[in-house]
Length: 331
Image (tube, rainbow, N blue to C red):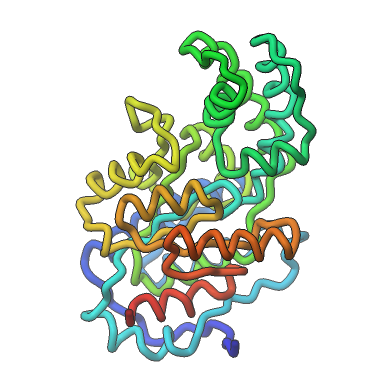
């Protein structure tokens, strides 16, 4: 699939709401860049163009050792068609899962959960003990609470609110500790967000089963925090009284209500079957992301499962994202 490097074209003037949110991101949220990199924010930029230019320049310098050459990839059809399509745009919001979609977190989270999962089984008098590979096979896409509820059904024990309180905070503390030490962004995601901010065509939000402290730790460590306003980060654990995690669609339905948009105004990106099922049940077109799979066989199986679960499109890497969006806009 042929792509071209991004070069700034004539400024695309989006709807007022989109422009307002982009200004917020280019001014308010770049404080995160300043704190991490000791660079000035863009609060004093004279124009929107200058603000976005400075935002891009600072983003390009993040993690320079790991990303020595910053190259933004975006299809020609987006560059040359943006002005024509701005009044016809169907997709207004991009809703991102966080774990293993924006950041490479699933393996770290499972490492943090491994000992606790087996401790839960010991606490309940169950003789079985999981190996690390077993956890990935049986519990991919589930939160720690979801893992424990699934084990409770499988091994026929009661998972109480007291159990939840006893183990949950310990698990989250361990996960956040590992995130702050070793977490990395998904390859290509920083470039995608810079493109989104510069083009000003889409609003963006995070919709996750994880808690807000965990999401925030992930975004801060990977230098993605600057792209999201607090009010557009939706956490099932932090926002919902029921704490219902995916595949329950509750967090997506909550996000739609808070944003005041219809499912057809959005596209979401998910890396797991539980996330895809939550989005589909909420009526939101979903892109299934395979970039976090550890092997080709896992990719092939998950690709098949995503099709069965109702994904609108399948994506292997973030460099394909804008091509897929363009196709979905025309559907």
